[in-house]
Length: 180
Image (cartoon, rainbow, N blue to C red; front, side):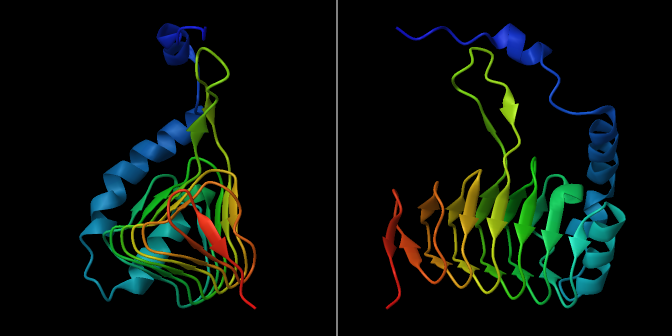
């Protein structure tokens, strides 16, 4: 028999520092300036993300409808595109390499909870998408997952484990085809 979830203990657990709470509040207030900026204002959105501590490379295109939880946990390499309605749930570090495409509605999730403990504490686990990879439309990349260089995670695929360089992942659960 499994132990009951201790909701009260979970709610007493401190998941964020005072700095993170303050930054999240300021980011939420500033977010409309990001979200409602005209689509071709790539430089404006890059600048906003940098002001909030993100490391953003040259010629990065982040679409205005992208949702970014904690930009100070974000690193994006040169010439990468973050498409419409992408969710970058950056509770932990999210590293996206150079020349990566993150297609519309994809979700990169750098947070989970430790289900082995009854109070289910927050776990801030990194996500890494290496250079030249492609995360296709509506795909999900889970916490502690690395998508290798040149790999492709197909539309609506779910990566809860690493996808090696050059491979194609598809489906849920993810199946893998290795390039020959």
